[in-house]
Length: 265
Length: 250
Image (cartoon, rainbow over all chains, first blue to last red; front, side, top):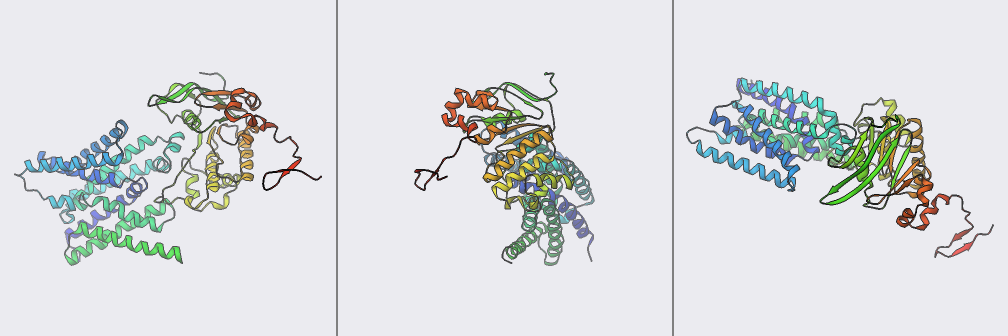
C-alpha cells in the first residue's frame, strides 16, 4: 500500500501534471522552451533569497521569476539583441548570482540537489495547498485568456488587428509560467521543470490533430508520467523527479512509433 | 471627428519612419461602408505598411488615424503555421470569434472550400489556404475588411471568382473593404477607389481617373493604362509557339 509520503507526492504530482499540460502546449507552440528554462534558472535566485531572508518559498520564487520575465519583455523591446541571447544573458546571470549568494549562506544547511532535481518525497501539506490552489488559479486565468492567447499564437498581427490585445495576454501568460515554476520547483526541481512542460506535450503533438486534443493528451501524458514514475522510483529506489521525466521520455519515444504507423499504414 | 456615418476609417497625412527612412509618407484615405478601396503599387512601396497603419498595428506613426468601428477582419499577407501546432480549418475559423456551425459552413461554401473543414491547415495548398483565410475573415461579418493580397496562389478562374465574391461581400454586408493587390486588370474593374502608392500617394481616384494619370503610367508603364479596355478589344490574331503573329482564319 501507499505510504503517507508517497500519497502526498502523488497528489502533488497530479496537481502539477494538470497545469503543465495546457501551459506546456503554449510553451511548445510559441517556441518558449528556452524561456521556460530561463525562468526556472532564475528560480534558484528566488529559493536562495527566501532561505536567506526567511520568506515564503513559493511567493519568493514567483516574484523573482515574474520580475525576470517582465525584464525580458522590456529588454526585447528596448535592445536589438536577439531573444535567445537575451534569454542566455538572464538565465545564466540569475543562476550565477544565485550561486554567489549561496556562497555567503554557508551557515545554512542547504540541499542544492533538492532544488535542482526536486524532492517530491519531502512535499508537505502546505506544499500541496500551494500546488492545488495555485494550480487552480493558473488554470482559471488560462481559461479566461485562452482565446486571445491562442489567436495571437497563430498570428500575432491578425489577433491584434481584430482587437485581441496580444501584448497583454502575452505578459499574463509569462506570469502564469512563473507561477507554475514557483509551485512545482519543490517537486520536480528547476532543471527538470521545463522537461515536464515540454516532453508530455511533444508526445501529445505526435498523436493529435487539433489543439484541444493536444492539450488533453499532454495532460494524460503528464499524469501517466507521474503515476508510473512515482511507482517506479518507489520500487527501484531512484530519485522521483528524474524518474518521472524519464517515463515521460519513454512515452514520447512510444508516440514516435505511433507516428510511423500512421504514416505508413 | 467626421460627421459622415458611412466613414469607417479616416487617415490623414499618415506616415511611418524606420531608422530615419520613411516607409510611407503623407497617406490620406477614407474607407466608406459598402465601398472597396484598392491600394496598388510596386514591391516595397508601402502597401502592407499602409494596411497595418489602418489596422492600428503600427504604434509610432505620424499623422492621424481615426477608426469608427471595432468589427474588423484582417487577411494578412502571410500566415505561417508552425508544425508544433495542430490546427484544423474548423479551429481556425473560430480563431477570434465564436461562430455557429451554419455560419462556418456558409462562409467556407462561399469561397469554395467547405469540403476542407476538418483538414489540417498545414495540409492545404497555397490557394486553398488563401480561400480559408478569406472565409474566416468574412464569416465574422465585419464592418471593415482588410485584405492583403487575398488571392495569391489562387488559380486564374478562382481569382476572378474571388474578386467577384469580394465585390458581392461589400454589397451584402455593407462593409468597407481595403484591398491590396497586384492584379491590376481585375482590380481596376472591381473597385470604387484606387490609391496608387510608391512610398507616398502617387495618384488616387476612381479606376478610370487613375488609369489616365501620368504618374500611374510612369509607375506601371503605358500598357497598363489600357487594361481597362482590354476586355473590349478584338482578338483578331493568334500566336504561334515561337511568338509569331498569325491572322486568324475566320
